[in-house]
Amino acid sequence: MKINKILISQPEQAGGNPHYTNLVNKYGVIIDFRPFFRLEPLSLREFRIQRINISDYTAIVFTAKASIDAFFQLCEEQRYKVPESLKYFCIGENIAYYLQKHIVYRKRKIFFGDGTFDSIVKNAVNEKHRDENFLIATADHLRPEWSKMFEQAKLKHSSAVFVKVVNCDLKATDLSQYQLIAFYSALDVASLKANYPAYKQGDTMFVTFGNSAQKAMEEAKLKTTLAGPVDACPSMASAIEYCINNANTLVNAQAKASVKKAASVKKSVPAKKTTIKKAAIKKTTCPKKVQKKAPLKKKSASARLKR
Image 1: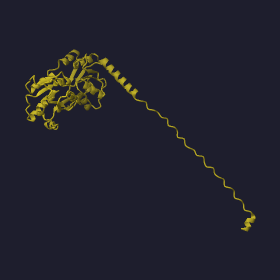
Image 2: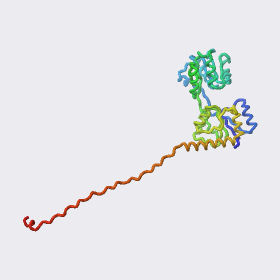
Image 3: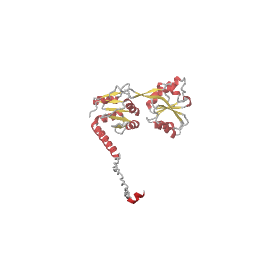
Image 4: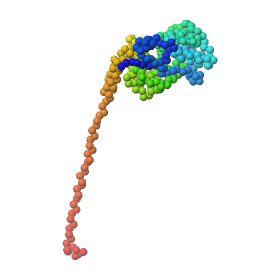
């Protein structure tokens, strides 16, 4: 099997991605970028249903750029002036620098982690921030473990939805023309199933990045060719390159794994017990003995004369 066309479930970067450009030049593959979902800000009316008063919080947690835009848009619609004392905790450095679109970047007020939510909590439990009241700005697919992390750290917090997930219309996209599809999120898998309820994978290879995407693939009963990140493939680009160089080996291993799984499932199903029905034996009852009536005695002639 040769990989000629690749679909990546993200929008193409404005200046292009040098890692993907390198794959195109090196292997002559075609890479298409097609987002499977988008994040849209809640309307003010939708946000107010949650009964969240932004002014009650002294720190806010951001995990996506869309949440930052939605937060400041809602503040503007409510005519609420964001105080300079508000602290910002971001999941990564790129999210933190995105804040410059809305505020003056101050290192004393902005903190970022290493790309994991756990790193946000580690920053938050610092003695300087322990007394803050945190608001976790989320999408409508909030992971419950995020709140649990704050609870375990004994940090005062609440969660509020600022953006909602909307599946993109993919029905005009012919997925069968791609030999490899790359997923970054569990939401990509959900959008695939929503757009193509009867989708059959066939020989298509899937590369996922992150535990949530891998788990979603398993729940959707789809086969993952390579789940990253791993030591040999720390990035999505390196995982795709590995698949290009080892396509036949990976496809054969994928096919064998599916056959083995099907066999184990068949073996685990208990055989139905066959019960032989006993033939119903009719009870035969012997007829009752008929008692023979005694023969009538003939009356004598003298008796008849007397009569």
